[in-house]
Length: 439
Image 1 (tube, helix red, strand yellow):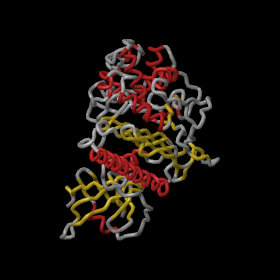
Image 2 (tube, helix red, strand yellow):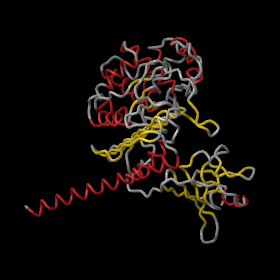
Image 3 (cartoon, one colour):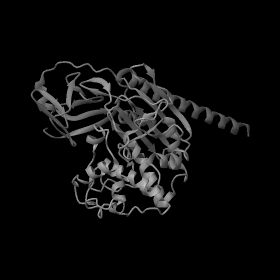
Image 4 (tube, rainbow, N blue to C red):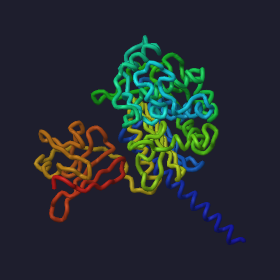
């Protein structure tokens, strides 16, 4: 009995030490992202019911040098979509609508609205165009009728249900349907039926006039300089965007959404977490965007000017990672790195890249196709994927992306001195791509 007790104590101590060591690695990684890449925002990583990392970095307000705190509120951008999806599924459960309902049941004169179903809109198979930000970024005198008239004039990208294309417009219309069916504003419905039930008391829907305590300001890069966000008409930037929250509230959402039936039945959750097309879209989430071979992931990222957000639940591993940024920091890349650390991968810390001058004649050897990754050259410059992303040399064989310090590429030679593969490190995680063309 005594020996058994000793074994239990040793096991608990071992687990506790391993968890502390993992927490230290996660924090060291994010500290480096702050020091090297000027990350501004908050991060939370949990496993089961244990918090592995919860920390704030940077400024909520750059002008007044107000620091972010763990309860700072951030615009979620497209991470908002899952809240709209849950609202629609709830209304379907209560028989107030059906996922097979056509769009013209709610907007009777929408072109081809008889062929577009709510299910198609949820999974981005509707054919609706991606965005309408030319409206909510520039106009203050919008009405629901004027926005609807404008959207109805946009031509469909394809026949509904025949292909896939990401659509913010679809989710905006879904938010309007939530209002029509429930008889409440989108904001009021989410507060009553989602946020309050999940005890997410620091979450809500953005407006242009209400003062929100501890709400972060948004900043984005223009000509490599951080500037204030432009005017956004939040009254019409919702459904696909518009929700604000904290990392702690999102952890509460994670627990309620995945581990209980407080919000949705198991049947509805199965619908939400099923992939419906070749782009892995479920309802308001993406199914297995990466790590799909070893770790089941349900996730969604968001990006709109200064807001960069990432929501990731590794369902079988019980690991949850969320990062919220207000200065356009690449949250999805950092979340990828944190996940790698959680799963025992070797992950390099970010470091300061210094561009050097090299003989560009070597670019002839580097150009080609590396298992679908194209390396191009033009006017003595090297490019990644297309001519918009330049690769900047930090050695004769190693380069970093001009638009993303979190990605490096190194060209590897065989014993005969011939380039045969490309070593890509995304957020510090190594991938090897063999050269298939241009050898």
